[in-house]
Image (cartoon, rainbow, N blue to C red; front, side):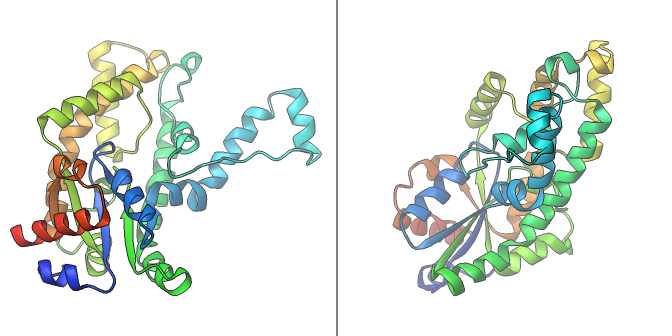
Length: 285
């Protein structure tokens, strides 16, 4: 780790951290709090994915839909209108909408092959965006004068590294340049995440073998034809499996850094609180 103990962390001229864990446990909350304090540069992996690496896919998909409307088609063909996504740190809907959900097209579902193609695009984009963190950490100091850097990672970061491989190149690269911080939830947090997801199911990235197995199992369990699957029902069913799938992967990643609880994160109100929480985690080993 780049900080060996609490003193190293507290005395560091430049603090660099990467927050990881399930979406909804406080990564973006902490990152925004630190950014608003004025001394931290906030790098969002999801924002980078949706703008730099998948922006063209997202815009082309919107244009394809617009081209089906004669009025919009004419304007697009004459370059009279512009269609693009308006992704922000707080609104990643264009990215998740593009990823989509497999199933019945009448309910907004995608053919499974198309869905998997978009999943593959996301994987490549996420790896590239995660690799950019060191560059942006340096750029934050050199160009903007921010002394500290926080990477607000995607919930799926554990899907694009092999946390059980000490030689995994992406994970090793991250550990050399940032302190990896796992925001760990308990059973109550998991229950709340599932409740929220059931209320508003959204597309997510998963490893190909996990999705193929989930899709086959869901079709077998429900007896539904592939083009008759309720997209929301499938992603709800898959999400519960994903929590169990990802938990040990996050835990293995934490061996390269430290872990903090979601409850502790909820108590952080200032950058000084954050420093103290990380110092305590380093001391706890």
